[in-house]
Length: 85
Image 1 (cartoon, rainbow, N blue to C red):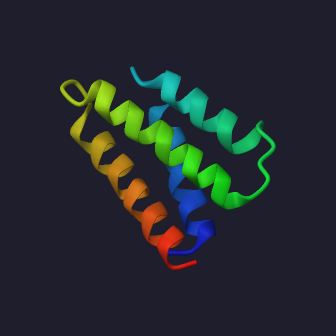
Image 2 (image 1 turned 45 degrees about the horizontal axis):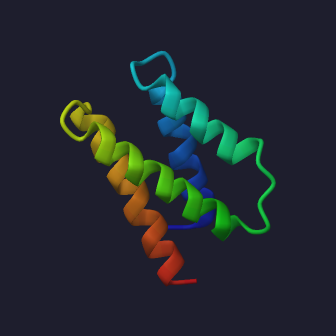
C-alpha cells in the first residue's frame, strides 16, 4: 500500500461518512487531512490513526459494521505502511 492509496482510502471514508450519523468524524478527518500543517506525512498518519482508534472505541457498540471494517482496514494499512518505511 502506498501513501497515495492510504490518502485515497481516507478520502473515501470521509465521503462515506458525510451526511451520515458519523458526520463529526468526517469533519475531523477533513480537518486533519487538509487544514492542519504537519511536519511530515507520517505525523499526519499517526494522528489519523489515533482519531480512528478513539472513534472505534467510543462507538464500538453502535458503529455500522461496514464503516467499522473500512476504518480498521485504514488503520491496518497505515500501520503496515509505517512499519515498512
